[in-house]
Length: 114
Image 1: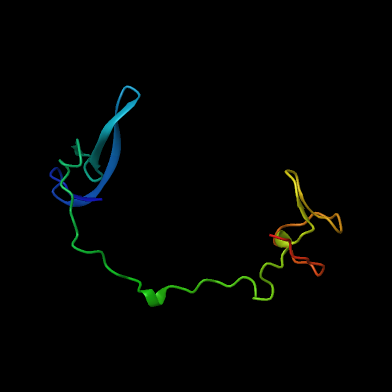
Image 2: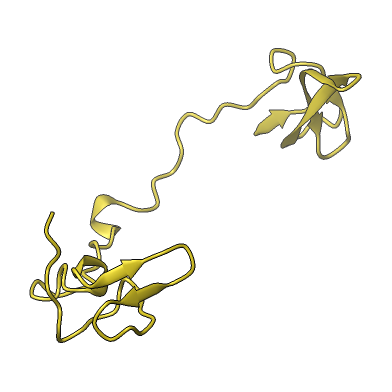
């Protein structure tokens, strides 16, 4: 938040600080980071409003969503398998009785019923 500070007569950043009455927050004060001038409320603080923020990136600059699994691998991981056993302490394969993760892949995959 930029302000036109009346104390140092420059455009500086303002820091928002909470105001307490004992242990209860009763408001917020704004403090100039250049000279330390205090403004009791947002209404008193001389904020500088820029007309528009510069546009650095366009829609064409956005990257496409990554494809982690190929279409034939989708929902073929252990998390979707009928033999995947989850308990609070570990995740195991019911066929091999080995500890597995939900994202592991297996050649003996059988899709779980919904």
